[in-house]
Length: 333
Image (cartoon, rainbow, N blue to C red):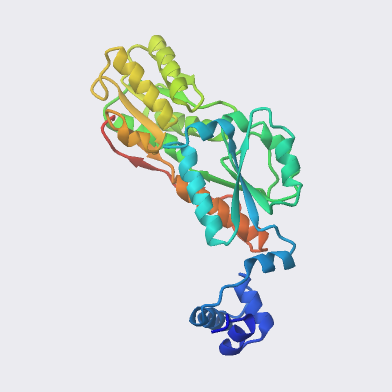
């Protein structure tokens, strides 16, 4: 049988060809009854919209860049970026748009802005990591829309797309969980102080400890890596040897911290309870398994993709959604 056409769909749905085309292109300003009829007719006929032709008519490339730090390509398994990339790719796939992976190096100040100006993509999703936060300034005048997963360290326009989790609430959850476990000498291994998510976790941690009447002064900073967590824990333990609870601002840092505690003869959790942040796969494979504050990482990637596509298609959406965090109780606290 001949391949069904847009005219066939319109005829069965009882609408004009133009109306059928608008519905199948994803436009929402069409009568709901007509839209449902078009979608049903397309399904019955097995009609597949020619997305390439639609994009050419609209002057679109049909691709979105996914920008991450180059060094993350060495260790994608089990990190923050794996789940975010997966969610973003799923969201773009559902929107019939091609994701293009764009690794960024620490000295990549001009190559990526040039790529964004090339016409090869319609927008970009930037998954922030400390090594590439410098790119934020270079991308501030991007000719295509950008969705940021995580708040960059520069001021953005009021209509910027920023997808984040409730870092402040997560910091409070960690403090409360350690206090509820009977711990009173608490320390935090914080993330880089020039990153907004790290600062928000500290702020939530301190506000909750103030509410509980617990000292919040034991603090060191790290870089959201396992090695950095180990080094930070060594410094923290040297300064505050009587700690009985630690909040590490990423699961990788928590893993490094637990190794140092165990090497120092401290049992986790009987001597020192440890809570991480992220809930990536390493949290379930370390010994003991890690109690952590869960970020909905895959959902963050998906929402970034969906929000960016909605903006590209002229829809009115929430541009700065904050996704909830939650405590996942395991063995370390």
